[in-house]
Structure formats: C-alpha cells, structure tokens
Image 1: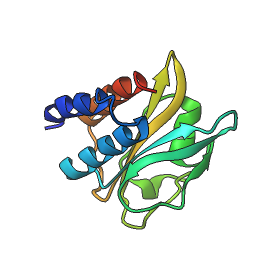
Image 2: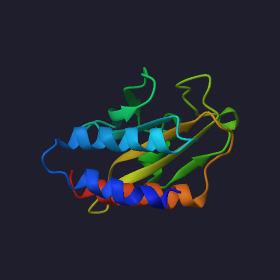
Image 3: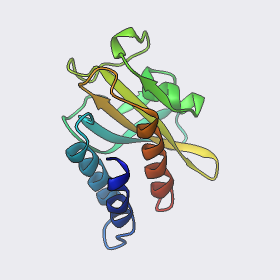
Image 4: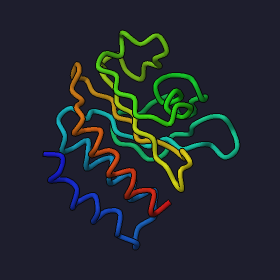
Length: 150
C-alpha cells in the first residue's frame, strides 16, 4: 500500500512551482489522508545553531510542541541518536512528550543532508503498535527525496 504512494510523493517533491514548505505540507497531508494509521504527520527541523527542533509543515491536529529540545521526547532523542525510533506503545516510554491523549504509537525517521541530521519526519498513530519495517523504508524513501529540495 505504501509503495503505491511513492509516485505521488515524487510528483509533489518535483513540483518546483511550489515552495518547499508547501510541498512538505502536501506530503504530510497525502500520508495522513491515505494511510489509516497515520493520524498526525509532520516535519521537525534543527533550529539554526540551537540544540532544538522546530516544527515545520504538518497535517493533523495543532500541537503545542513547536520547539523540542534535543534529548526530550522521541523526536529529541532521534535528533541525538541519528537513528529511526519506532515506539509501539507511547505509554511505555519514560521520555515521551504527549501531543494528544489519543496517540498510542509513534515513529520518527531522521532526515539527512550530506550525512548531517537536519530534521525528521514524525508520525503519531492512534492505533496501538501499527508500524512495520515497511513504514520505516517508506519514510526513509520520503526523507531521501525531501533532502534533495532542502
């Protein structure tokens, strides 16, 4: 199912008539609308020289977490580890920042440019333990494509 969205992602990425933020927002909305277990989809990016992430384009309910210090929550941990982080049950995570009481699981995949972690795609799910290796590969594909336009 996820593979079938790849051509649409490529189409969005390659549309140079739109701003990068517009294209990232369209990717977020595409994923949230087409993948049942993607309830909130957003990009976070390193905030200049600060040791924090700043919320970029997203699709889903508004969040108060527009700035996340490195090391805090799942996103902040990925900013430091440079590795994918799949959380099947957010309630079992000590260092979890709750965006919504409905969120049951989260996946965060770092976004690299020339080997540097510049941001990440973050997905919250209201479904317990929905993420698979296919989700990870799909989100890595998206980030690889997005890195070409940043």
